[in-house]
Image (cartoon, rainbow, N blue to C red; front, side, top):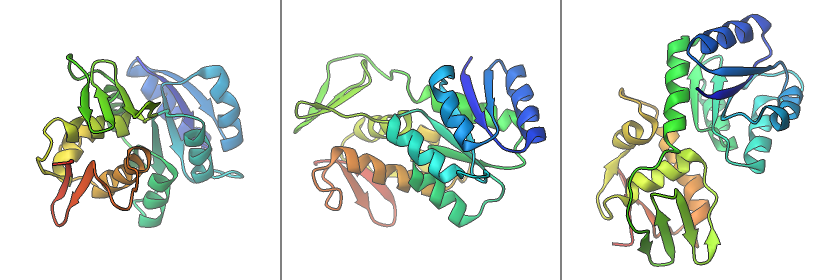
Length: 225
């Protein structure tokens, strides 16, 4: 069971999703505005945020940026349409995944469970050292030099999957299946935006990446190789 904070201004939509998620075994807190959602964060301590982008007052993009600036809570955004500007804007603000309304509750439940699994250990064993980057899969900890690197569950899972076989190239579709559990032709923007955020945290020069390398026309690989 997950503790979910649902931030959605449409009362009927919010109530319907909350009841459906409750039937799937989750505990759901509700907020009707971005401001109310931010105030609720401290009291509810959710595991996942489900956030509508089109909110009155403070919109979902700003709410997403503020939540992300404060920590690494997983954020799934709700968008009324698959509009490129909405999707890209939400991902750049720090969202981990998105669903287009109207969304079937089972689909949203699957996305919630998938994002929570990204924070689960993948293996035991000694920490791996890659130059000044250390990855501890059992502890789900990443350090660069002596500094602990704070990653969202999605960023962490992406790093774990890429670093599992250094030098091996993984396509965007493979990463969508491994990290996001999208078993269909998914949105490669999820991968590209997450790569950008990960590079900003682990690379000395994100514009000249050493660890998360682009293989043009195909995908990404973990280096240095």
